Length: 452
Image (cartoon, rainbow, N blue to C red):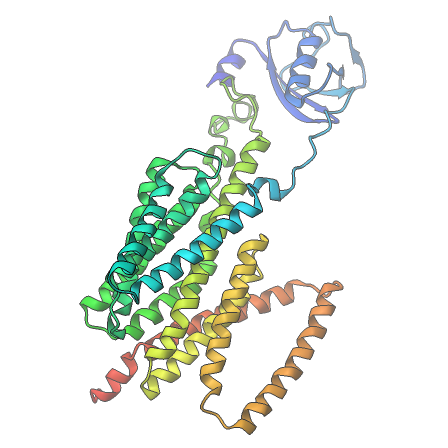
């Protein structure tokens, strides 16, 4: 290595301690103290060279030769002088999250919602109205393929919604058994358009990747259930459980830090000094630039936001349809357990998100799913029992408010975090376990007369 070859040629390996840090430096034996001071100042970003002292406190003049002052390889010098430059003020995370304009994001969201409504209206229209709506939706999807303009990333994110709505209007069928296949085809078209837009413009790569993964996954699940002859409730149960699991698994894949910022491969060596010396390559110090940190944080935040939108859409659509299609008594019980446990898991998963947007979206998804499950569970009960349960819910709400106030005043500990993680794991496991009942597998085994 470069450090070993320098040491074999008679160079001196020194360690300089100073107020700005510790730096290992390799210099020639005939180098002067000013050379070492200059290297230390460059490594620590000092405005000027510091004064060097030996371990005994003796000052090294700038023109003193190291060998003449008795400095040998392995010696430790002290830097006495100016401290490092003040670091730049940290930019807020909101800047790294790429705040491209709240108004444009709101307009894009409204446009996507209107596109979905137009797809639903076109599915129930006929003749010229349906054709006109499909053409307009197709033109809206085509705008995402134009990579010019300041709002091109917004158009790119909304384009798959227009394409999916157009496909939904074309392949719509009023039979409930075909609804999963219809939604699967619309999701596949949205994924294909997202892939095409991503090939043209990569500025919205994170959201388009979520479109591709979500659309393809929905199509695979619905198509597989249709080919195998499963009931629609199987597809809705699988999609709801997948959304619940995605809320916990996505953060582990959202932040992707390059390996070059985690491991300095140039400093992996056999001997101690060859690993401590500064490499002679282009990258002199393993310092992660602020721009790289902002890029990684922004990319992860955009991925989390897009994934949270996908989880919200899947949960809001799959939960009511699962409750509506699971009509058998045993299946109905399993569907309610899946929905209630899934809503609790989503609410508990939202607490671990530090970014406000995905945290809020997951909370909305959890509330919608939980309310749907409660409505389905309380509907067949008597009015008196419903009132009693409402009073119990009010009492529990008051207790939760008191706990929340105490938590906000500092009543936080690892104990609470561990209990919350345990509750989330139990809710997720309950949703996955009840999937067998909600999908009708338990009923099928029961009716087939299979005995254990």
